Length: 179
Image 1 (cartoon, helix red, strand yellow):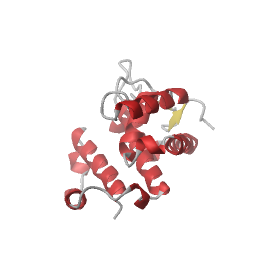
Image 2 (cartoon, helix red, strand yellow):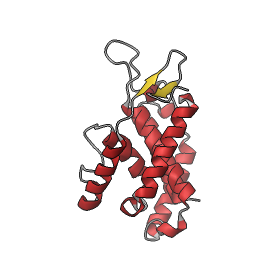
Image 3 (cartoon, rainbow, N blue to C red):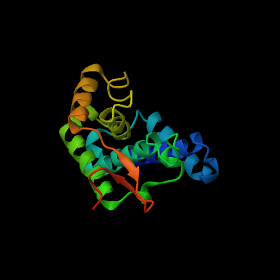
Image 4 (cartoon, rainbow, N blue to C red):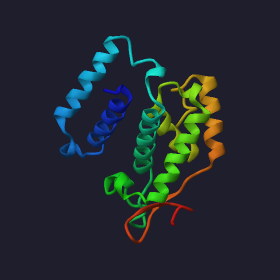
């Protein structure tokens, strides 16, 4: 089993519980993941960076990036801003052009900042979304080593903001990725 993929899956499951969707959680799978993670930690942590393929790193980062995007973006379904997108939408509701952009952004960021990211792929995906969109948390808020956090923050800000919205067709788009 790939520990980073399991860590991302565990994060998704715990997120569902946190947003009141515990009825959608496979508790046996959550226990399997927790047992696997505890086993790796008991052996001294996750495998060294060389044991994680770039494809696995990218998928882990992208999953956390998309999860954070849906969690932190309102669906604008009413005059108060609506609800967070993750309450009514999932990754499968994201337009393929928007998903391709998200993947490309994560891949470029990971490739350019691999040394600073280390093995923290899920955290990097989450913090990339927050930082680039100026959500008030991210790489700079103390969870990363100071120098790395500053470099990652600068790199994320250079990418610019991304605005998601729900189209009339019920599909999630990023501004500029409608076709």
